[in-house]
Image (cartoon, rainbow, N blue to C red):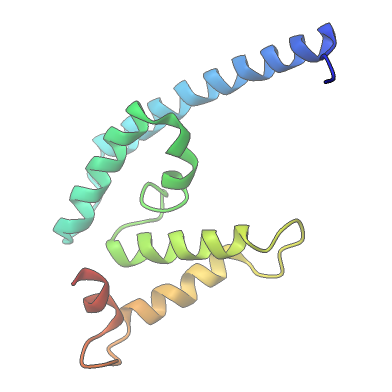
Length: 130
């Protein structure tokens, strides 16, 4: 078993302090963004967003995931939140050299979610909500 050097321990401590500062900055930023009402006619999305904001306070480990999906600054409805979550997951599964653009993939998925095309009698958006 390798014992870390004092320099390694100090660097890790310094990084943790930076992370803690970053977390507090993130909380402040999320609070500010939640205080300005997100324009949405989607009641389900509004409830999910409120729960996500509450979750960031009790479970800081999920902040990154939530900021890339439901708490993303450009997310305004459930379809956008879902498309961002899917595209982020696909992007992260590409490894070190991703061959896709997460934002473009999100746009494509959102277009499909907003489509009126029916599959087994319902749209993609309706299927997700059921």
